[in-house]
Image 1 (tube, one colour):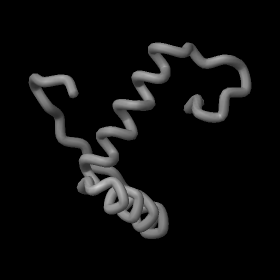
Image 2: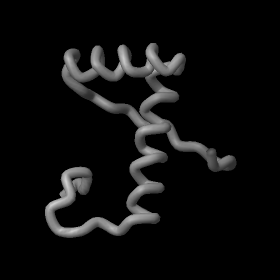
Image 3: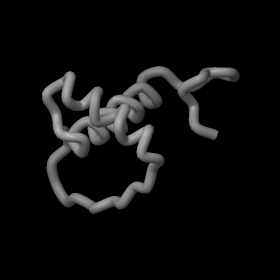
Image 4: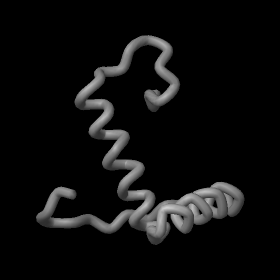
Length: 61
């Protein structure tokens, strides 16, 4: 993980989505915050290593 200055982010999501993420975090023995950080980190890493093509499901538009 990248060290250095950090920024706090607030995120609003439906309860059902939170519950799903919380369950996944528990399965991986992580906190919800830690799990979300890893999701974002892995997403950004994927973008850098494999530029998106047309129709890729994981690309946010």
